[in-house]
Length: 199
Image 1: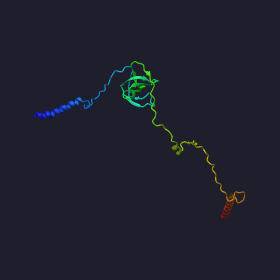
Image 2: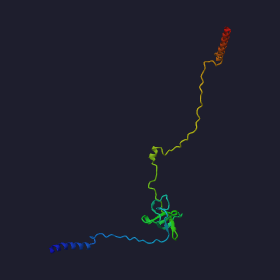
Image 3: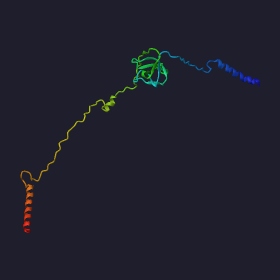
Image 4: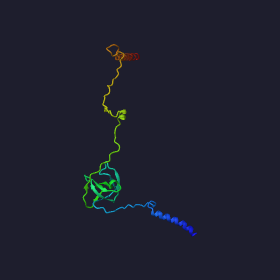
């Protein structure tokens, strides 16, 4: 029984010794990255309220890459030529530097901030162009000015006139006033006759 145990334990012990001695068979060791934390020297910026952190000194052409929240501090490296923006240490981005708007932060500590030239702005990925073939289909290239509407007076109103039956045209016909007077005279004559007969 002891022989069987020794026969089993000896090969296991030999394999264990070989695995410890062989560098390729050993499990890969973790490499520890040392983070050096030192107290920054020079001027610092204190953030009273949340502020955007940008890739360059400006809102046009420079993207927002992060934020600093109220109470955070960052080491100040320099300022823009106009002094409106401050370059700070901002780990985790390209070059570990970024920019904050100076009126939104408080500069602490003694030290002179040197003027730093801003990085170039990012060029847009797409440049707007007009396709000449497509523009020709919709007449986009030959744009003519549209005339504004003007006031056009209305045509004069034509009042229709009716040709009479000839009663008023140059004395040819019987005027209606004479017919009325004639009837009036006949009526008066009849009245006089009836008064005389009755009396």
